[in-house]
Length: 321
Image (cartoon, rainbow, N blue to C red; front, side):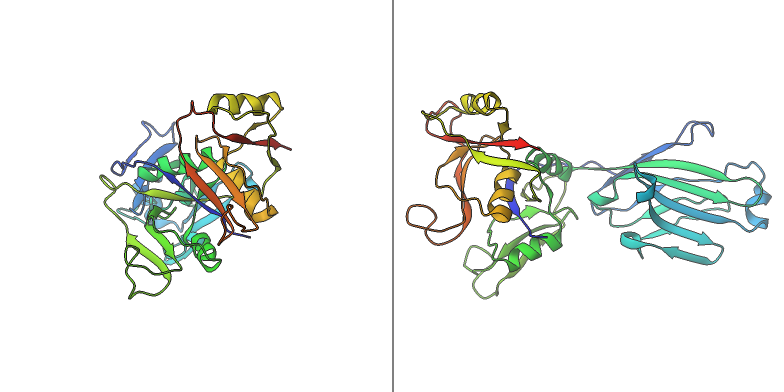
């Protein structure tokens, strides 16, 4: 799949890790909270009151990440005595806590945004089976980044998506969050203020910055459009509010940043007219570089965030299928 990356400025703050336990066995659902890149424990214990059952009878522990469609459930960990197996993205990243003979709590290391969701713990001991659900919420600065990308029809980019975009020529000298909690930026043209001239082209990394005080942009990933992106022909230039209303009057919505990047990259959309987008920015997509229209490279050109009362631009609209 073709990689598309766009930048949105955000401010970020992270809270500490914790989890809340249910108040009684009749309420087996727990909620866990984790910082990006940190470790978290998802609680699960055998509900039997007999301490001998768990230690004297062969048992099995199975952890699953539960999807809305059960056919899409992901295996996380399976334990049968001394034999343990982890799966997929959880391989070698999860293990059982086993503080005592009734403890089947799961420890997830290096938590990412993709780890968010509902988990199910099943303890099968041959006498009394236990099933407990735990919801994991990943909190902190990247939550704002995730929301910023979602609002523009995109998602926070992975390292692999950035790497593919870099191989395709992406050069951006602003460091931004990725979905694993790292801050990085892609450079194809080494220069003094972008990692120095002695370093070759590549992905520059800030590692895992201080999540309490660090503020960065965010790299977003936009995928294929499921609708029609277009320039709305108007007799006059528009303010931002007029642009929003003009799209609504045409049975559409004002286009988002993800829409313009998808149309430009995947559909070759080309127009040398600067137009309002839903985030209040003004941009235009150029697939065929030419004089006065991004003469040296194909790109989505960024004008900025002008005064929304300024009547200097047109508007790009989007109609969903």
